[in-house]
Length: 446
Image: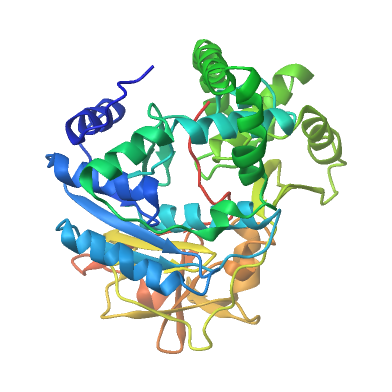
């Protein structure tokens, strides 16, 4: 068991142990509740050698959410930390908890830059509830391990440094330091599964059995088993997953059914999602992977949709993104541009043939009939997208980069002749990272 006394120094050492190298910046996810207030206060008082910043995600689900965001800003100001508040739209999907979680993780993924990390305030009691919830939902062996202490998140890393401590240890720290926090009424809503376990099921089990200790021990055993299996499974996953997170179907041809079903579970986990049930994975294998070559197969699992295109498997959001502004988005490279619910457009210094530098560009989405000048001819964008192998469902969400009224570039597809940089001209190498995968993004975790 962990040291029962939570102190800033001990917590700082925990964070250092979870990081392979010092982060460029450590973001502290703070809702203003007890757990995240303790995390923020303790790490600020620890004076770590790397910069800290606070991020608050406003789900806008409660009438007091603007006041809660202001409380977090005031906490950050008292601790001398910069603070960013991100407002999100929670689209109804598999349920309110899952929808809010997807929106939150997508916001974090859009926030993190390479070399940065984000710490959340999940603790041992959260782990107990997670393991029990997964058992009741029929999880496999992998799911019994609960939440990992750290994993990749987008271009950065996600840390859960408080997992060794129970909620009581956090409460004791808050009382010692005289902290105040927000009491979100959603934490007591009886209709939420996690609250039902927390307030009714676990206390009842604890009267007869050492339930919390047993579930934590089960999670430890499952994680140990997963670590033993991880090297071989990582190699198999690495060989089958493309750089964009899609699953390369030719890479799994010839493998046995059991091996493919395991790989499918790892592929979901790679995207920060719990693996589907064995029955769901069998349906995925039969109805999508083994569907006729000229079919357009798809399968809904939870709040996501799995589709096949050109012998690749895609894991998609099955909820529509928010609408675009009528005038498009103004983009001033190299500042990244986050398109809500769609992805991130970024730029690095480029060279000959890349996008010629300009003061700013306008980014819009397809309306149909677009054309661009390539190799001396005006070509239909539709043909260009087909030749580039862009899946049909991605095409309406692909950012089109305009200079004035002329289409200048489409990331990963083409740059129009008048906007290709010549030798010696300043230029941008542009990249598009779509948010077509899970809200948490690719984690690479087995």
